[in-house]
Length: 403
Image (cartoon, rainbow, N blue to C red; front, side, top):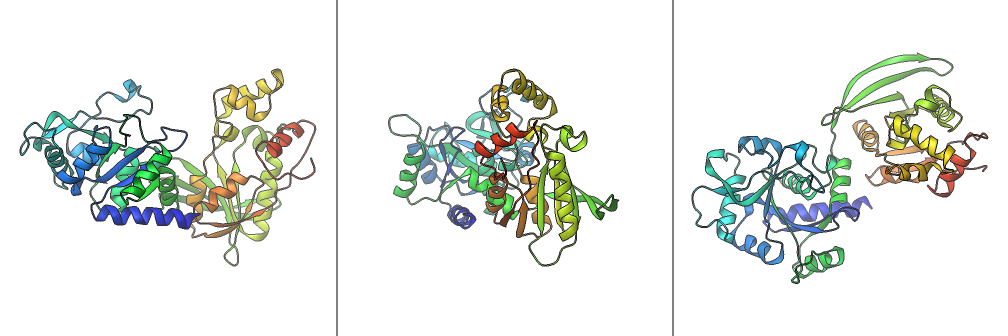
């Protein structure tokens, strides 16, 4: 699967370097639409005219925050007042001060884009308002916000251009927005590379390192001896992850990605089997070597407060663990495994044996080119957690034996 993702990204990069546009699809659970994207430095009257012919005509220029500061472009509305569906980060519109007439022709818009996209572009070269709509991308790119704005800036950086890319939403002749099959047909008709934001997300996660190892120390533990405890920090968000590790032989270490559980791990709640899995996972890694990655994902990522509210719904409304989350307006499972993946990439782990019964964890590693073999994690059943484990087995497709 990752090889196909890699091919799609590399095809897009080749096209962009040649000044050709690419088609980028949104995720199906978002807008489910597509944008035509090209480098700001490669904007011409011809390719902007092509863009105007096939899109909504609202031509935007995605830039990073550094570029926005250099051009003195601030958000159109304050962050706490941006109530658009996806909090789209528009700035005030712009126009080149010189070299344009009305500013709206393909030639004029291409010129404005070229002026703003220069590495040494200055705020004084741009008039406000104008006919180009700048957008400020999240500093983490698609890893921080899965929008076309971030995808555009990420693609510009991957292709070796300045952080300024043109984008506009593709539209059918009848005025409706192109969806997946129509976007695929359009890309095929004009021989344009097509990729998804999800593919770009997986590609960056697999090929970049954006964490720093902040500290580590050898800790003696009861029963299992010494392990190294390390703290890694996300360079963008500042989020931290704790890792216990032990040297291993060969190139196929044991790995456990353990979601934190205050009620179980610390206080020994019988509603789950988290504490038992915690101890078992650490014990296995202490014997064979590998990585125990402790992720801050209380309640499958919804936090302790919501987890306790979900418990009440399970007790009082006869809901299962997944139904309770949904009843609170929350995802059944809000976890992401980016930091765990980064820890493995940081430590040059390309193959591992994953201690988990969760198919989502297995897929998360395989999707970023880590060859992964599942290792069964024993379920510890009691009268309080039996229904919880049955739900995980039936609805979440966990491999759980004995129930």
